[in-house]
Image 1 (cartoon, one colour):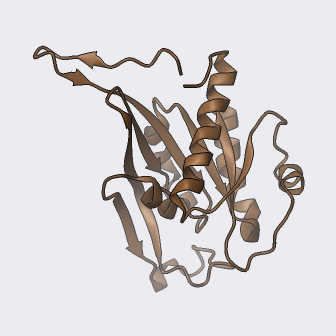
Image 2 (cartoon, rainbow, N blue to C red):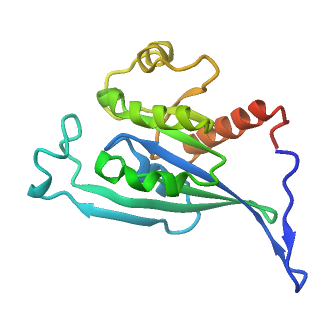
Amino acid sequence: MDSVHSERVGSGQRVPLALKILIAGGFGAGKTTLVSALSEVRPLQTEEVLTDAGIGTDDTFGVEGKSTTTVAMDFGRITINEDLQVYLFGTPGQDRFWFLWDELAFGALGAVVLADTRRLADCFPSVDYFEQRGIPFVVGVNCFDGSRRFSLNSVRHALDLDPDVPLVLCDARDRQSGKLVLVALVEHVAAQRGEPAA
């Protein structure tokens, strides 16, 4: 965005502007992986091991190999330049942790909703959440190894997305791929605000 400026504190030291972006999606969609791939610092993760107590509560169909889950949030940082930093907040994917979402979403520039075509319905709550609150978002279709590929038009139709919501293919493990998803989000937010993207 054109109007990005840092502030100066009393000592004349620059304090960079911080932009907050949420990484959301269903259980096992790759949120923790994406934050880890993008963050320039060791990400804060609140992963806990799935236990027998979650049987009947945690639906692991399609992600049977998943052994941990985020119970609060993931956090990472990207420094764009001396005036701008991006803070990434990965949301928990299970509905019993959704009470945290309002706190995490407060002040967010926008969100990335990760979609797993093996469990596409799992990202409906994230899409609904951001639509209902007017928070700009993009959908990143995480291309898992061995998963069936669908056209973006098929995914858009299945998710009933508005035509202006960007939909991109990505690999949550790949930093460059993740950056392209963030660029799509920033361009989408700028377009909604009628501003040129930086």
